[in-house]
Image (cartoon, rainbow, N blue to C red):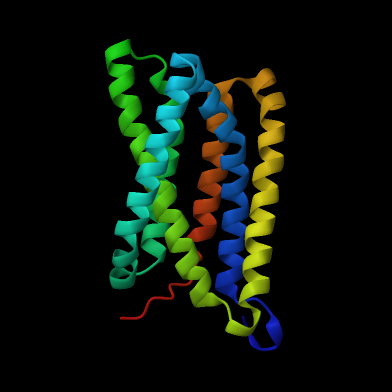
Length: 194
């Protein structure tokens, strides 16, 4: 925060990027769950979401030390770029034969979890860097609250959009929004100082 409680440029930039990425993620996750459920029912959905969660935790664990050594911005950009690949891979994987589909899907689920873990950890570290202690609670509440609302509303709208456009079209739209979010991240100030 700047003097007087105004959010810093870094906070404003990551706020906008997070709003875009929350919008994209919110549209995508209902399709991911439906895609997994269509494969093998609740078993595939449970295993798939479990893989994402475990890899998210491992990604968080390992990226923390890296961002303290090499900076925040490069890893935020890598995380978003990998997410673009993941979001394209899910709908395209449905055209693979069964043995290949399962193998590719496990790798994609693992990458999805890693990118989530990278983003979540680095984003929290960055927010700590760009907010003043006196306004940190308010800043974090606003950041997570707005991101959550955007994510939730996008999830609610995803069903309607999916019925009218289909999985691949939604994935391409999500990728476009992610690329816009990455363009915003290119303007992010690096807060790490060696």
